[in-house]
Length: 341
Figure (cartoon, rainbow, N blue to C red):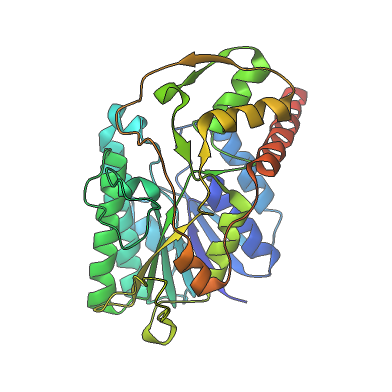
């Protein structure tokens, strides 16, 4: 049994991770600002499910509030900090850039300061495939340059990686930075493509398809991502677990107990194929409104998962057919419950 702090525990990924940890008998302090970036009723429904576990304690406060963050955990040791809270979304960063600075930079710095004080056994921080930006070498490997972000969201995440490396070096904090690739599944965010397409198809509305449907994404089912995070939690970076295979480039820093790891299956799906999968799961034909690529978007994400596999023996493998079907089933059940209420 371990004691975890999970920031963003009312969010999509944080909820799934916290529930998995609680089911395994761990203590979890969940910390979330419950912001109105999307419908807070969905966040409250997630937290209500987590409160069913006696080992869960929820704190509602903003990540930018350093005193509240410190008070949430007190002086008791933390085994693992999993920092998932962030202002997400590429397109929203064009509308409200300041929120990305406040949450992703100031908020993440507060987490780093907390880790400096408490010295957890492992600090894990969520980055994103968006940091690869203008990189055109595929598949994306952790060792590739990620110095040309195409959105402020990506820039703040890359900056967070750099800040975390400096703290890892200066204060000896074992830190894993994981880069997510288009996570989807039940309890997903309403601003994400799968939620939007499903909502529009069931209502008979047209769906906006950016990039004229020519994009591709390395979709990662949320349960697969959680499995990878749980496995990585047991592998705090140090020289004893440096990967020695000539086929894998380990990102373990030469000057800090710090590592960057992709979490994805390494199997991109064309956007139009993804839409057809949703149509099949729902049993309808989508009305599509083809649009130009949005600023900040990239044409393709494609992960190299060899480092994840070398470290954990695991690679996400849930097919989009299985994952989309699970989401559509959840969506229907959740909205039926909302209407009944």
